[in-house]
Amino acid sequence: MTIDIVDLTDPEYSDLNAVQMAMVRTAQVKKNEILAKADEEKAEISQRLVANNFARSYVQVMANARITTAANAQIQALKEDLDYQLAYEALESEGNENGPYRYPENPNYNLMPSQRFLVVREYYMSVTDDPDARLQAYTVDTLARSYLGEYYITLYDLLASYC
Image (cartoon, rainbow, N blue to C red; front, side, top):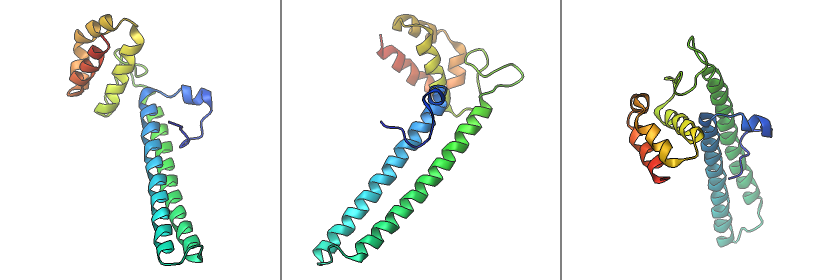
């Protein structure tokens, strides 16, 4: 997937944490869906105009301009929302009185459950390359059970699939 929803340099992009990467990917998928829907709408209008002998008319030019403007407005709103989310996440990821947020030393309880899943998964994937040791360490992690809640089993199944 080509990421073009945000204008980041390679070093800035590599500095994004797992939660921020998930936000960027989600926004990129939404942008792609908006563009695909706009293209479908333009094609439908073109087909209708050809069927009614209005091919190459000013009506098509105006309709395409209207669709493009609406799609660009949606993408701009999505982009602004993503910028806000990334900035907010950067503030939230700084930490608290116990130090910077980092699983398992100082987990961030302000994250949504799906974001917690990404953080814990990234932690265990970076701890060791041995999938059996990774799964063993995860099964004895009592903090992960309470921190992840219903996502604990999902991550367990994911880690077990690597064995």
